[in-house]
Image (cartoon, rainbow, N blue to C red; front, side, top):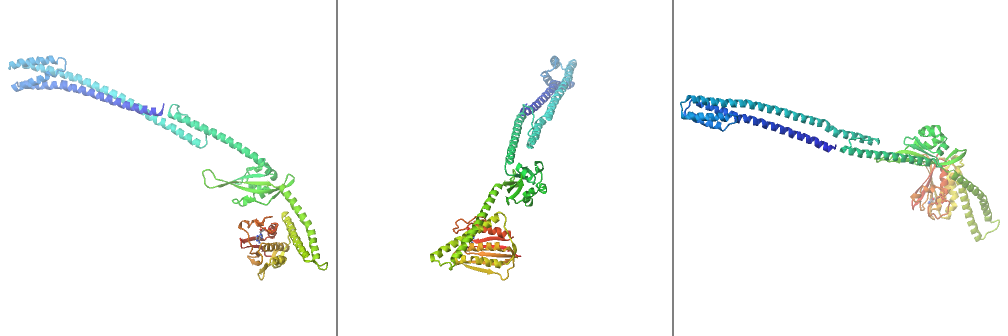
Length: 574
Ligand code: ADP
């Protein structure tokens, strides 16, 4: 039954019972009133008339007889009992006869007798009617009690059943909704099917079923996606290792397992710190993660890894994975992915290239040197005097030979850098000597452009830890650049001073300077600032950086774009 019908019926029934109870009560009260009225009007009045008539017969004066006559008339019009009319008529006749013969005491006795008869008749009627009234009262009590009890029973039943029949399903439904919210999608509710709750339960069950289906399909979908990604990662030719936010390994593909030599079982679920303690390669791979947990994103030098009976080169990239959890604003680190890119093939090609450059530049050195020797011989007047045109030709050959020598020198140096074979002989060296050597080596170049070379040197500069030859090469290169990139008639300053227990050598020019976006790039191999018209290889600064850093020093540039640049080398005091 519908809840609405239930409440309407319950309240309606109560309402009906109240009406019945009121009607029964009112009915019986009016019946009782009728009974008592009957006694009062019909019998009590007759008794009263009779009493007055008896009193007036005590002294039959004309006034009393008048009262007697009046009451007799009233009695004549109040005949309620059987036989009362005959007796009243009899009294009327006797009274008429008494009026004609006033002293007839016999008639008075007859009148009294008649009156007593009426009184007796009415007294009996009162007794009878009071029995009827009592019966009516008893009946009233009975029926009112019955109706009251019925009302009580129905009201009690409603009180017990109605609230729980409304509240219980709501309670059950609330509990089920809580279960659904807690992802227990198998939850169902079962209510009486005809009530509104039945409809609600059906809708709820449909919803729960759909949620369950959605959840299952989603789970299946997720599992499928997970499998797909796992397969994808496993099929990658590069090793990949995934760590969760607690630095525990969550996945490692077959390549990673192969190069680390750690079995899948020992890999997955273990903390990378524990793995690092047992495995050297793992230690190298997770070093940055363990040391600087919050700031990892970048590439390191290639790693040389020996696996599968051969040497391989891998470029390590650590990706820090961050995500914004649902409902939150801030991103959180949810893990790291270590990618090892197999660059063995490129490395091998690079080696071949470096070897080739080294061989070629080495092979070039001898013929260039002999060209230079021949040039020197030709310049010697003892061999023969040259005309002006021949001198000019010799000068240009000399210039080209010098340039070739510089290039082959740079190429040889870069092969040293690339193969990691920088041969250093670091000894305490006087930095002044290096400066003077470099100035000397670039003097002719400066003279060609009428550039003044100015040296500002502190009185006493301590010796430095440096490779004499390489540092001189670097400084020569810097001064040569300063001359090349300066305008004619300019001044190139070389400052030598000590600061913070380090020796600084600065080369300052007033050329066009370096745009801020290229400040770091100029130290990269083969990089030349776009638009540079002067000849060059783009190798000088990168070699300089490698040489200086290999000695524990530092090289940097400060440039006011358009006004000049300052290249400074910092070396450790010996
Ligand atoms: P390059 O052989 O091209 O001079 P470098 O490695 O010595 O190679 O220099 C790289 C680039 O840096 C140059 O091509 C040039 O554009 C810029 N550069 C180097 N020195 C200076 C300087 N003193 N003033 C302006 N630009 C410079």
